[in-house]
Image 1 (cartoon, rainbow, N blue to C red):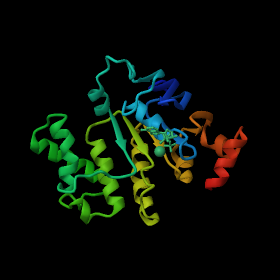
Image 2 (image 1 turned 90 degrees about the horizontal axis):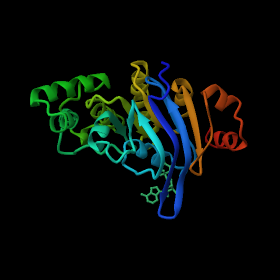
Image 3 (image 1 turned 120 degrees about the vertical axis):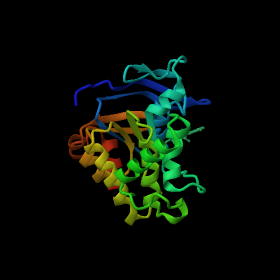
Image 4 (image 1 turned 135 degrees about the horizontal axis):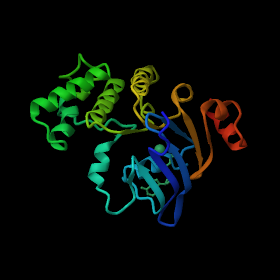
Length: 245
Ligand code: ADP
Ligand code: MG
C-alpha cells in the first residue's frame, strides 16, 4: 500500500537525563506496511517503539500517526494507546484470568463493550491466533508460545491501527518461536501495519517492507530487506548482520 506517512517519525531525539539515546531518528511507513527495527542491544529500539505510544517521551522531533500529532501535549494518550497495540517480550498476562478473560479485559473495561460482546470478541481473536481450543486455560496451563499468542490476541482485541512488537519471541524456547512468528505472518497477510523489533532475520527478510538499522540511537541505514541484507551501504550494518547470523 502506498499511503507513506501513515506513521511518520521525523528527527526524533530523546534523552534519559544527560544521556541522549535517540538522535534525529526518521523513518516512515504506509498503511499495511511492515517495518523491522534491528540493532545491537542498547541501540534505542525499545525506546523508539515506546515513543510511538508515548510510554516514553521524545523531547524533540515529530511523530504523526494517521494524521494525529502523537507528541502534541493535547493528544489524548489513552486514545492513542487504544489505537496502537503493543506486544512485549514478556507476556504480562493476568495469572488469575483465563485466556478469554485476559483478552476480553480491554474491550470490556476500555472500550466499554458488554460482557458478552467482549467475550465474543475475545474468542474471535483467540481463534485468529490459533487458540480456539484454549479459551478457558489459565496462563500457567499454556506454553510460552501460547501465552505470547494470547498477548497478541489481547492487543488485537482493541482493534489497533498499528501494532508494535518488541522482541516478541526473545523469551521463548527455540521450538516455540515458530508458532508466534507464524501468527505474526498471518497478521501481515491480513494487512496489519506493524513496527517490529526482532532478531529473527529470516522473518524480517520475509515480511518487511523496510528494515531500519539503529546503532547508538542513530539510524545508520534503512531500506528494503534485499538491499540491507545483500548490499549494506555501511560497514557497521554488515558487521552487525554477520554477528547475529
Ligand atoms: P534496545 O531496545 O535497542 O536494547 P533501549 O531503547 O532499551 O535499547 O535502550 C537505549 C538506551 O537507553 C540504553 O543506553 C539504555 O540503557 C537507556 N535506557 C532505556 N530505558 C531507560 C530508562 N527508563 N532510564 C534510563 N535509561 C534508559
Ligand atoms: Mg529493547
